[in-house]
Length: 352
Image 1 (tube, rainbow, N blue to C red):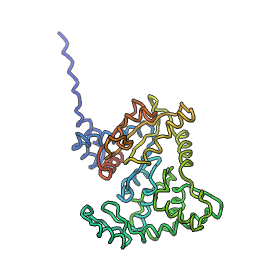
Image 2: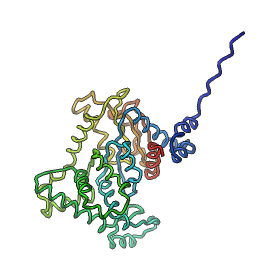
Image 3: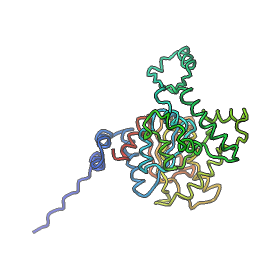
């Protein structure tokens, strides 16, 4: 008898593959798998799966925070990512470093302005008169947040200065949080503070351009007043890059195709992303450490236009020409609002 022809293996549709991956996850992940099929929603899911795959392969992930992610309370999802071992290093602006703590101690004094687009110049002056500093639809209370933190951190700066010691900005914040001096002032669940989570794990944090922040301005004022004698009491800039170079060379291991074990998850653009990604070409080209692997994964959540020479809006492939990514590196860009996208990707990675 003639043998029966072999049945043709049916190729799984993308939605079936995604449903299978989400089967053991929670309701948020199942919702994403069912509904997020095209355009930026599909890019979101692809990036989330890539993040998950990178960790499963033994990799680590660096997350970079631009914009006002701390004021947007990204800590609600990011803190859990840190505590569950899904984030291994943070690069953030000075604003994101301090604003997580501002929210921690003054959350109940914040004011939301849903109709911020309709504010007149007189309305804005009224907010200033009440010491309410606006970030889009959210006002940060100067006295309850900024000045309260200034007093506490000034004591840390002066103590280090008098002892002839110097620390990075994030180390001062770690010292402040671990001292417990702010604990009685907490106004949110501490589980929702990403900086507290990072302090618990002593996570590496890099804060390029810290001088461009509220506390950076306050430190400069302390130096001008003479409260702090040595301007180098707070370490910044080039020292952060050398710190990052040591971290990268110690931590990054080759995985495949010249890619490394450290992935790069970029929220927004600006210095928070530009500064750290350059450590690889610096190691290769300036220090001739060509055995150091490239970044092993790249994702950016961006609303920047790919035009006018904008680095923040550049497509990931442009980074190949600068020796930051390999042609084979998994690359994703989600052109959307990070306050919507990042918590969803984090939920997928956490299996929620």
